[in-house]
Amino acid sequence: MPSSKRSKAASLTPAFGQEMNPGTKEGCSPLVVGGHSFIAELGNDPATGFDEQLSIVNECLDQGINTFDTTYEPERVALGRILESLGRRDEARVIAWNFFVDENTGDYFGGPQAFRETHIERLLSQVRTDCIDMLVVHPVLDDSKNREQIEIARSWVSSGHVRELGTWSPGNDPATQFGPQNPYDFIVTPRNIKTPHTEVFRSCKAIGCRTFATSPFNRGWLLDQLISTGIKQSSGKQEDLRARIADGLLRFAIHHPHVDHLIVGIRRKEWIDSNLESVRKGPLSEEERQWLFELLGQTEATGKRE
Ligand SMILES: NC(=O)c1ccc[n+]([C@@H]2O[C@H](COP(=O)([O-])OP(=O)(O)OC[C@H]3O[C@@H](n4cnc5c(N)ncnc54)[C@H](OP(=O)(O)O)[C@@H]3O)[C@@H](O)[C@H]2O)c1
Image (cartoon, rainbow, N blue to C red):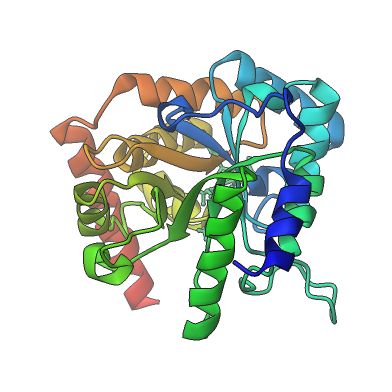
């Protein structure tokens, strides 16, 4: 590492005697709060107010949900502020990514940007911490930038500013993709009944990566589609059907031998108990699974006809 890089990293190292935040491989809860809970876009409209966000994060921590994802930059800023306000940063595990506001347009939903050395200061100050528990290095389109960004991310692990590295949605052969010097401790991949990615989870576990599934409701679109199919066949209340389908989707996503954690948006307090209950209930029965997949089949058949 060139000396300029080393001195930059060293200047960020916590002072002697200053506690690093806890966070072991085993320390993350099965449920992870998705960062879209803290922003208005991507289906979470209207925005949840700051007081409500404080209350949700507080309640999650009280109930043992201690891990929080922050994909987009405003999510990092929001979570950093919430954890500091609650004084509970040390109890939380935070996942951060290489998504940044576009300097030209101010847009924060653009694609990932390759990590640069200066980014660590920004990540730490936004999360209001001295160490990011888990950093996702989302690949960009340029291979040389990918090689460079993983080296930068590794230097942050060496300097103590990042605890673990992960990546986004690898293919079915991560052993070849990551190479013998696999830099990743964990992976994040969508998982729902439409796109289960079962082989990705199996092969990542086989090379020792911890696995995070995400988007059991496919940002709510899948949930809404299944409800609109199901309601035509049901004489019950729509909210009962919604709860039953949401429970099925969550249990399908999380209860698999190769899935360790599930990231899901929680922007209402009432979802905390119901989501925890879904985790407690365990895998779907054959009957429940059949019902859910029949609903999906009917939904897809309707989609093709329209
Ligand atoms: N796919 C990706 O690219 C990606 C990458 C990284 C992270 N993530 C994370 O994954 C999360 C997305 O999860 P998701 O797509 O499954 O859905 P979601 O965005 O968490 O939720 C979508 C819809 O489901 C409803 N809902 C949530 N929990 C419910 C429950 N227990 N019962 C009934 N309805 C419920 C929400 O209702 P309300 O609006 O009423 O709350 C919302 O309308 C995001 O928070 C994001 O941070 C996704």
